[in-house]
Length: 163
Image (cartoon, rainbow, N blue to C red):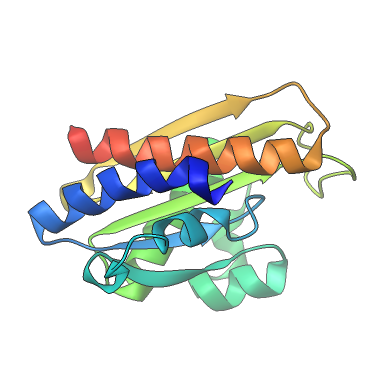
């Protein structure tokens, strides 16, 4: 997996370094694969400030430091939910860019009822820039979905940085 995403990470690193900007990442269903991919780039500290795996309500509450009512009416694996997380991880980590992924990888039921194989990646950048991408694999293959969601999240960030 990391060999496949390393090329994406190199391009993202180059774009962020050119801008003198940094990103923070909230991995959801990807389980840390997005952050791990970025960390395959030597000198990642130049462009990556950190993040976390948001796999429980407790992790969400600690990493994002938002009141529970901030999520009112939202469901996991949705654009509004992922955008809220991208904004919060960016702000809480003091980065210019926030990348969040929220999805349902399959193998078990998602707490919000999201179908297996659905992921939403969101990017929140400087000046109110926001961008989302929904990925639907139609699969219940947990590992394949995690990998597909990580690649899609990285592609979302790369595309946002190219705009």
